[in-house]
Length: 182
Image 1 (tube, rainbow, N blue to C red):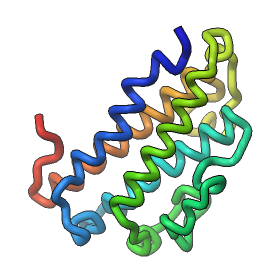
Image 2: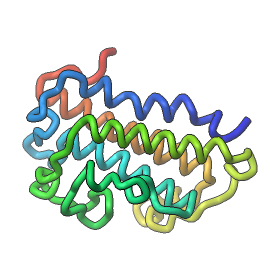
Image 3: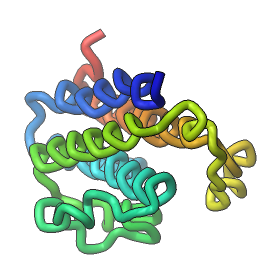
Image 4: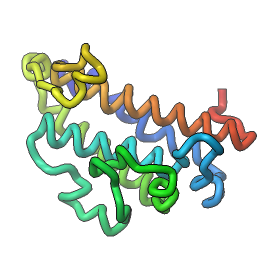
């Protein structure tokens, strides 16, 4: 069994799920920032998939992500990105300035999924077990100083993405809307 086989359903689900979560939301709802919380839904989605793209392509594949490779900057223009290309360190006003099209973000999420799945499908069990250093995490998350390629895929493509899609549901709840259908 390849690494791709073990992660396929999760990649499909966590890259499809925002379509359902955002169905019927207005542009104002997608960009609404709750009091005391800087993020809006569009920023949260953009950040989740933008970071996944750069981290998986850079750390595991050793090449630029599809954002750079396929010209996504024109479709997802974000003038100020903070301390990382995917929005870390932006303040409330910086996040408010991130105004994106839902369709473009969802198309980008699907393109990220397809590229990562293609890569994961090439990994054998032994390649998936190779250790990758993650020094940028160690200060905050000591157990994440290193991880296998398969663990890095799972952490960023499932865990980190699920965390932010939970945030989308939280923001919807603060608007008085139901987060998920269950």
